[in-house]
Image (cartoon, rainbow, N blue to C red):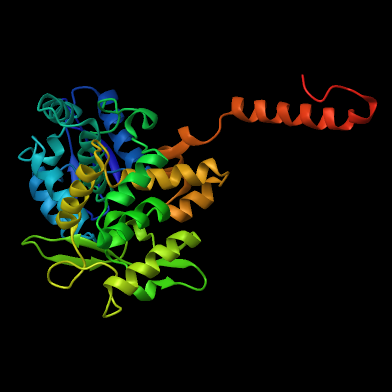
Length: 366
C-alpha cells in the first residue's frame, strides 16, 4: 500500500497506509529522496519498529502516569520508580522530542548535586525502564538513554566493608539480650534486615536446624509496617549452624511467650527499620565500633561461605539472590583467584610427591 506520485508543481509525493489503514504522505523535491523515505518506512514496518508519526505527543510525565498505572509493582518499587520519574529534568518534554542530550543533561545534574554513583545508576535504570516501555508501545522508535555515560561506581572490593570475626563477636556480646539473636541471624544466616524482623517461631525447625525465609517487614508511610514476600522472590531455606540454633532457642524461651513473632516492636508487631536502626546504633556504641552497617553482617556471612569453599549457586541460594550473576557481581572478588588455586595445587603436588618418596629417604620438605 505504498506509492510515489509526481505532483503538477514537480514535487514527489510518497505515501503509504499504516496497519490501521491511515494514510501518511510527505513531499520531496527529488524522487530519490522520496524513495529513500518510503524504503525506511517499509523497513520499519517489516522489522516491527514502525512508529506512527503522530505518536509521542504526550510528555514524559504524562506517559509515565499512564504507563505506571499498568505495572505490577511492590510498594517499594513503585516509590522508587516515582522518585526517579519525578526527578527527570525532561518531564515536560514530549516523548517524540526526547533526545539523548536530555538524558545526559539530567545525569549531569544529578552528579553535580552530589548524588552517589549508585543512586544515579538506579534512577537512570528506572527511567530507562519507562523509555523501553515507550519503545515497546511504539510511542518512540528508540530508547534515547541507550549508551549514555554514567558515573563510575566503586569496585565491589573497595566499596564493601567486611567486619572481622572479632568485631562480630564483640557486637554479639555488646547487644542487649533481646537483640542478640537478631544480630546472630544477620551474621550467621545472612538474612536481610526486613527478613530477620519478619521471622516467626514456626519458621524455625529446631530439629532439622533450618530456617524458612518466607516474608519481610517494610516500613510504610505513617510509621506502620507492611508484611510482604521477600524482595526478588527470594523465599528460601537456610541451613543453620548448631550454635545459632541454640542462640535462637534461648531467645524463644526468654522473649517469645506467645510463640509467634521472634522479634516484636512496641505494638507487639515485628519491628520496622527505624526501630532496628536505633538498636543497632546502640549496639555499635556499646561495642566501641564505628562504620559497620547491619547489612555488612550479610556480607560477613557470604564471605564465610566462600572461604569455606561453597560454590556460586550455594551462596546464591543461601543469600536469596535472584540470579547467580547477582552473587558474582557482588562477591566475585572474595572467591579464590587462579593464582591462589595454582599455589594450592602446586603445594599439594609437593606434599604428594614427598609422601611417595618418604621410604627412599627423600626429604619431606623443600
